[in-house]
Length: 330
Image (cartoon, rainbow, N blue to C red):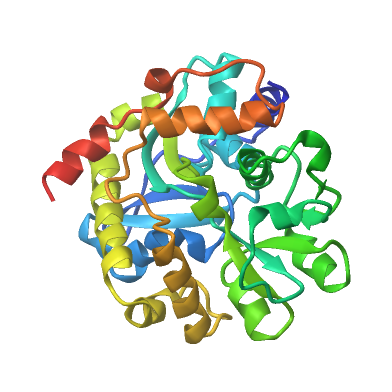
């Protein structure tokens, strides 16, 4: 509930909002604020690089929010048309009592995207091997850390046996691990594969495989915005569904060159390895519709971490009708 207050507070302190949609070169510009820039979200960047957005008469102006709270604040203030972050941010707003609720209208990632890296090679790794070990798993209260806690509890750990280090900022964890902090560290791609390729550590598990289906990252917008911009919403979803299919069915070596535009400092080989990792764990939601069961599981995860005072309503927060209509007609 503290998170909902923080999000709403940030929105009220925002400067005058940008216009909802702008025109650029005959294309309608949509302002999209992403939680972070990651290959985990490859279909979003592929929709741009492959021209799928342009085919729909759209141009995406992408900004990095640097956190789900900031993304949702941008959506609520009007600084962003569409927010791309974990649906828990919209859930906190719902629980905070906002009158113009953000609507989650499309789910992109359906699993945790992090990989567990060990200092030593462990071909027979089991989750119970983490008992008595220190793990860098992210910010306390963040979904990566809460999902990791949930996986440990599902594998028989008691609260007393869970030893997660929350003292290191998310973007500093790899450096801290390399400097000697903790026995294990969770890393997203391409960091995990590059770390292993450099001989600094070994990937021993995919957190997403162990955690099961969880609505991890989704697109949301204010209900009032979607009603005024249905054509743009439909076009955006058509482009994204094409990109998801491309990311799921093409070979990583074919996909990787189309990501260079958005990751110019990452080698094509690393991009391909990252895509392969996410294809392997079935990271992307084919029809982009969130299920109520997965939403409830997300609430279970947040609740078990002690970060949820009451539960939200799926029907009030999620509207799958937009993406379902598009998916049926592709």
